[in-house]
Length: 92
Image (cartoon, rainbow, N blue to C red; front, side, top):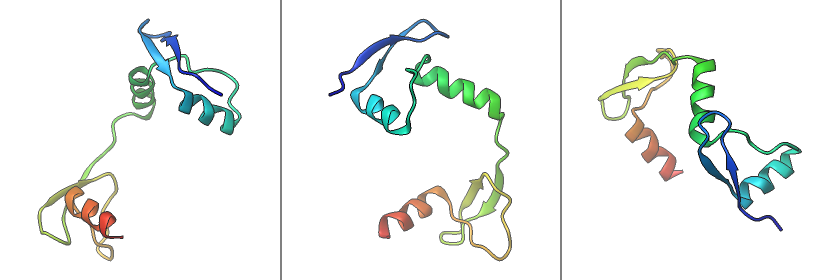
């Protein structure tokens, strides 16, 4: 039903592909306009609006290594480094 389309980014002027899967997703969500920016320009725009995320240092409750997390760690909740967190998610 949908076919990949080549669009031009309005910020950088580069061509990008609006894939059939993305078009289907847009239709499911009720979006009527095609994207006007490529992925890298959309990401840059989001990060500019959001600003830099503050990262907090913590000690991993599993391996004891250093972990940087985007939330303030609490004493009553364990914090895991990226590797241990990924391993835990795989085990679920």
